[in-house]
Length: 249
Image 1 (cartoon, rainbow, N blue to C red):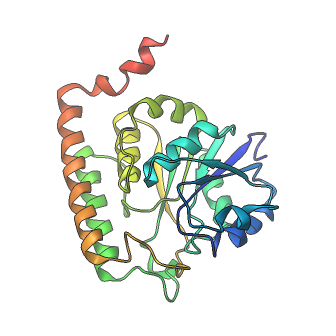
Image 2: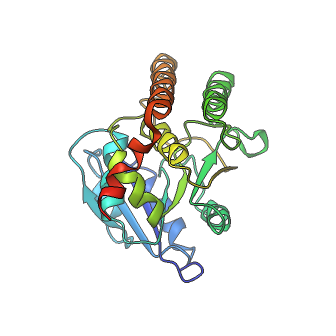
């Protein structure tokens, strides 16, 4: 518990069988974490065996994609505060405290991997990825006149359940660019958001996205297109992103 609020952590997994057990055990060292949910997204053989005995709850999502895995985890989580990490060795479990500290004042806390002092040796954050993520984040910040954003691709985040309940009906992306869609929806719905620096280390294993510059470049273009699309839709009728929730009351 944290300030009498239950904390759930979602860990999507596809190719993290060599790192996920250590990350869960590191999370277990932090009493603020009440629930760890691993979403097995057609993960590599041996992943379930690595999770066994850690106390984490494993659920299966057969629709392939990062967005599909996170949305399944959101539906399974029971916490008042719901956090997302990737268990590939790039992020540090102790950063849960940093995210929770800001959750006191914000609906959504997003992580950022672009602060030089927290990019550790071996991390896959060269000039191309760092400044690409920074540039796209600044485009989003400028077009929506929102809070300072420095990384559009960081997957670490902490969301209050009530905010997530209002955002969830508008999640559409099943693939790798789900993260920016979530950011856009939170901005359009006028959630109180902030982005804070988190530690970023060397990945254990190979990433199918950031491990390939051409794939990362195409993903960046898709993110830019989505930002422009959402800005246009919000200008036409920003109420459309609240209508489903309003109809329930």
